[in-house]
Amino acid sequence: MSDKLIIFDTTLRDGEQSPGASMTRDEKVRIARALERLRVDVIEAGFPAASPGDFESVQAVARAVRDSSVCGLARALDRDIDRAGEALKDAQRPRIHTFIATSPIHMQRKLNMTPDQVVEHAVKAVRRARQYADDVEFSPEDAGRSEEDFLCRILEAVIDAGARTLNIPDTVGYAMPDQFGGMIGRLIERIPNSDKAIFSVHCHNDLGLAVANSLSAVMHGARQVECTINGLGERAGNAALEEIVMAVRTRRDFFPCHTDIDTREIVACSKLVSNITGFPVQPNKAIVGANAFAHESGIHQDGVLKSRETYEIMSAEEVGWTANRMVLGKHSGRNAFRTRMQELGIDFASEQDLNAAFQRFKELADKKHDIFDEDLQALITEAGVEAEDECVRLVYLHVCSETGEVPNARVTVKVDNEELTGTAVGGGAVDASLKAIESLVHAEANLQLYSVNAITSGTDSQGEVTVRLEKGGRIVNGQGADTDIVIASAKAYVNAVNKLRTSKQRMHPQVGDV
Ligand code: KIV
Ligand code: ZN
Image 1: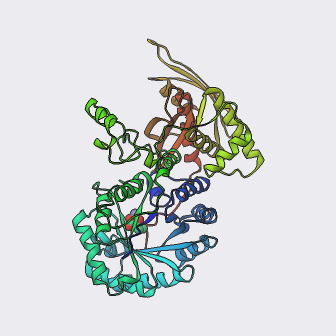
Image 2 (image 1 turned 180 degrees about the horizontal axis):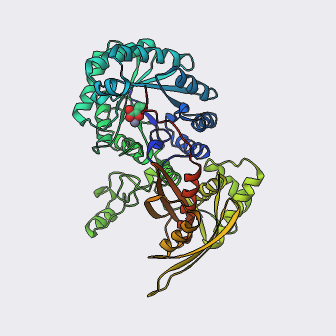
Image 3 (image 1 turned 60 degrees about the vertical axis):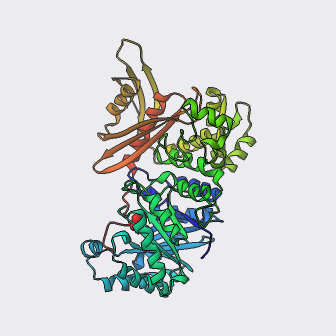
């Protein structure tokens, strides 16, 4: 058995299935480039049949990425597989991932199919996918609640049909580590042609066990783990890439395998995903949380100062927590700016785009002395946000906040090119500002989340604000960044309103007929 553990990242597909985490094509390309720098083996770029926009995103990632395999998800349907094959046409290393549900409850209630029909669909889908790519992966959806005998039967059949990776998903996060690992071991043992395929796992975190279940499977022979940055994903999320990778690396005495991940890129990638999706990372999150390497109690600090290993099992530097690097400043020129952006995987489509971004950088550098990579990423996210289908634009904001007085705000916004001004009072400066904007745009949505995060350290840090709005079942996340958090909040609200106005219908891969 190989000692290489393949890291399959599905941040752009399963991660994007988190409510409100949808990403634009350009954002997906930026994340894909960061994943490539991280040296993930496979990037699942999306579900091309979901919508024309999803198709274009997968195509753009396929064209941008050279080193990692790029994968497209397809239900076991001819039209999905054809769309995936088409979207991946220009990929250096294309992979098609096709799936069909195999648990009794899914086959009966969702698919309305007999087990024989499910096997027939799966085999046909794998054969069709092989017409587009040599690298085909098959998943029996809801394997965690499927019968083992049936899994053996369908998996043997799809290997014969040409599947090279068999991914065993715990779709609903129901499995327990020993049980799940044991099942993987038995499948490998019982399926006669199992040596012709790599066994993979895809665990959801509904009971907080996604990483534990994945690692148990690795101990029983799985050699691919599907995971996401920051554990993003449907409902409670997927197994967190950074936790899987660092567990295998830190406990190399225990795990019989290694990954090729460049761990020093982990934190940058985590921040980028958080910045683009608007999903903050909790401070005590393993590896990538702000407190993951912070020591508070005097005893711990004393121990760490004497000898790091007393309380640290990994080093902060190993995962990319180097002190914020001041990369550019007020006097940096256009070339230095362009070069650093290129190093971050950001190419400008035209000189005009470069000039616009450079102008924003100069404005930021006037307000903030040191500019870090995180500031540059936020700058680009914001530029993308404004470029996209912007119907509402923040023009002016004046807020008055004084001890003992009720805060009030005056706001001017441009709605479909018409300038409107409104005022409101509120419980605080942010509340008054958002109320003033709402009085002009009439989004009439439910505010589900408001969060502020400092992008870097220091009181002159930019505040990164996420506003999540829900309307008629649709959920969007708006982002805004500024050295003034009231302005950042107003930008985030306006961004969410724009997304509500323009977000398009797309199909969910796991809801529907097959
Ligand atoms: O959770 C799941 O079962 C999935 C499949 C599509 C692999 O995401
Ligand atoms: Zn999933």
